[in-house]
Image 1: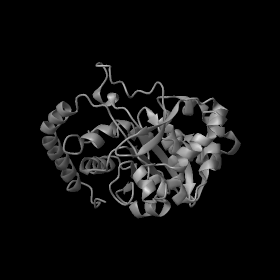
Image 2: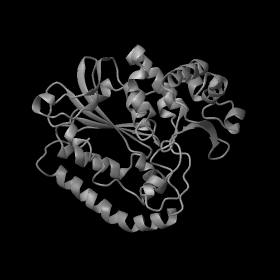
Image 3: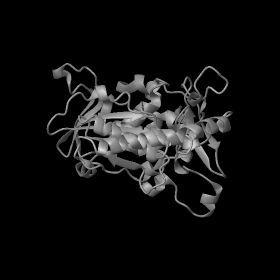
Length: 340
């Protein structure tokens, strides 16, 4: 990105998302609804990306109807491998959130980065921002900082359990309204298959939270151990039930917050917790219009969609029955907690 791109990027942010029908109907774009100056946001984005040598191509792509979405390409992403028969089907997806990034989301991450890290932003995070395989996950980590009231004492990649021999880090450690929180963020781009295929053909597998438990070996009194999950798929029955099973099996984790980028409800966020749901809700802002307006996957070139859906359709009923049995067994087992 170069300073000469300022008019173009300003226009992209000003009209995001753009469609002829929306303009004709007098609809107000996202940033304008928020009272955000798109030129100021574009200038911040350009200054920060120039500072770290970010030069990935930007563009605008038509999707459904007359809608046009701005994006930037992520060269070297694991996704978009359409012509490689040796990679898993999940890696053949192509589009926003996979091998494309959202300019509006990146610009907001820059604004948040400046707020919390001052002069050390973005240089301190150059490695994360320029790593094509980790870039989108890191943007999600930054965006989650915008979702809490009264953040203080912020630490990136903290090791809250080092005193008991655990050297694994969590993404964020901070206080929200003076309450200590350990927060681990997980981005699940492979969920595009659940988004595209739908819950009748694809459900959440048992290993969905495989990389979380080791982060939280202990419950610290007076501290919340939380997980934030960003997913391009809706929060469907299988994800809710798998999350409940996971929380009941791992009592050192106080809650899981899910940010669905294709939510069909009033809010893109859901809070799951065995006992601290209301406390978490008090500390959590629930995001703003810009967070709720994010458009996730815009297109995929799916050569084997019908074959895959047919295969999954045969499996899903038995998997859902097994999942429900697990949930019922845990509800009527040793725990006296009510499901939330």
